Image (cartoon, rainbow, N blue to C red):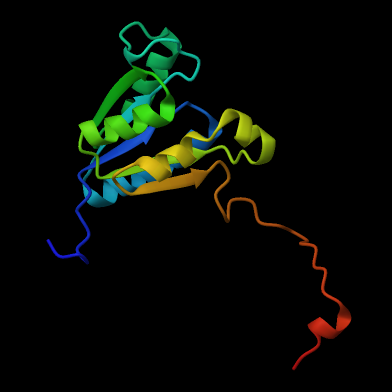
Length: 161
């Protein structure tokens, strides 16, 4: 394979915490899977878990939410995984272990002190994943256009040339 060849997408990893940001990213994963014929591996890593490893006794609500993801896409091959641990590390490990070709995940858009204290799972994944990562904000561009954007140009700047 030459340097300029793009590897075909056969498996997409979609990590979810069931937040609005993850829900926004799911639409992208769905369209990517439909256009490439790829399967989707849906991963949930509880952030408040003190254990590490596969989770077999996950709360019923989270299990139902993952089942709902599967029913939304009857024509797409979907696998579901629950796994406990540090979310960023688990996502990167699962992507490598399951030979995922693409990761599609939502971002919460935390910045400043909150990001410094809590860290960013998406940032960790972008830095450490061995496959391409598509991050989707909870409100993708174009979703809610500005009606009257503020412009602060002095009068000489806005005159025609």
